[in-house]
Length: 273
Image 1 (cartoon, one colour):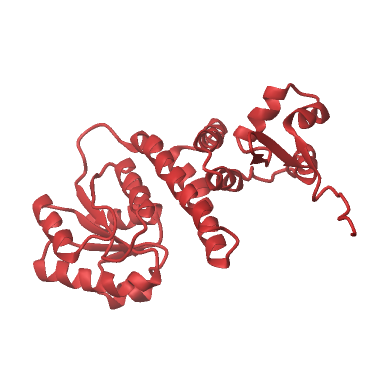
Image 2 (cartoon, helix red, strand yellow):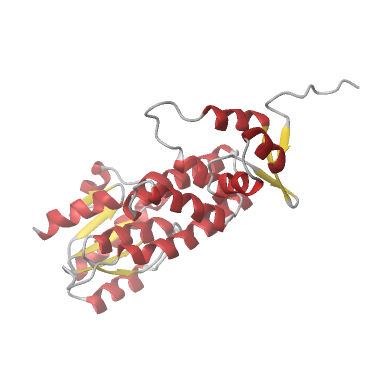
């Protein structure tokens, strides 16, 4: 039987072997892995590194090339490595990124890439679930850093229409709003229209009502929700999310639209001006 030749693309090394080649202590090599700087896969109780990945690490980034934080974070999230994922975020913040930038330059791209990988079949369902669970825990640690002291500028309610099950974009947008000085009530995802409307009514007065739509299949439900909110005359509607286009926002009679949290903050500014 022919044997597959061992190459840099197939040869794996232990962390101790990597440390020897790098000329560093074993724990330093382990720190590189935990912070996502050195790609590695856990096999049983041992971390293994592709020789090709070690070569990339040794070469270092090209001059002026940004650190691949999102790739590092995504790898840790897929493996369900919460402490390693947090290590990547800590390293990114130590380099000068604030929590809002971490959301937009690390978490959002990592989640998007993992979602795209799942759609292509490159990421399994269990890997996607591990990544989502890890992301939720990271948001729980980062969220309090967005809260500003002082009197809030106003109140915002945000959630998704029925059938939309992506809660993480809601939480991320809510944190962006809090960072801009707004008081936010999060309704989570997949809330029936009547309950959504009732929650807004109990929270009045509100500066805006945010509706997050990540999947195109949820756009029709978003339209129905907006019609119910319009009928109840509860406040301006901000439609946002990856599935939203300006044409959809106009067709659904939304007062403003955005594709992400920072864009939502700008839209809120315009609505409250």
